[in-house]
Image: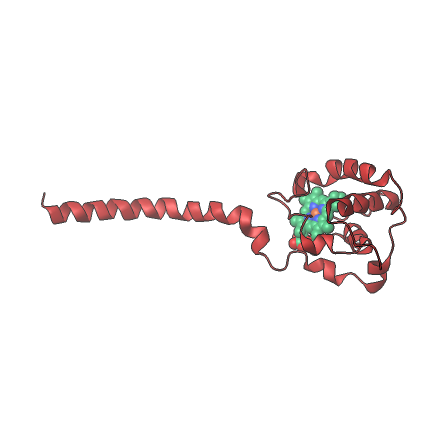
Length: 149
Ligand code: HEC
């Protein structure tokens, strides 16, 4: 075999190899990053009606609300959003600025209505106090609000 033929053969083998390996490598890389690339994630939060946004958490100063909310989170939310709300394969992080900057009323509204067409279930079957406990827990994960001046 001449040197040129060997080179052609090696090239053919290499490109066949690339055809099989590259698409799967790309697919694997795309999966975990897909949430962060999707600009419309969290867009639903901006759709909460003003009245819902302004609603105060009635359990705001209940010292047990955060712990109760953490338990509920483990039961109902962690499988998609991750044990620490850091995000998982099925759902985005709830530590993200867009979520943490949302008012308690907005988060309550999201829980009540879900984003069903995008895979976030409705939680209206959980009694209201439980939904507020989850809101207390989510809020406890974020940066502390500045005291009003
Ligand atoms: C079956 C999987 C699943 C479960 C269980 C789940 N979520 Fe979600 N959640 C999602 C998905 C998917 C999104 C992203 C929706 C989107 O694209 O807007 C989401 C989005 C959110 C958002 C951001 C809203 C937005 O505009 O995207 C919040 C807040 C949230 N979830 C809270 C919770 C809480 C709290 C629980 C538990 C009571 C929970 N989720 C349970 C899948 C889930």
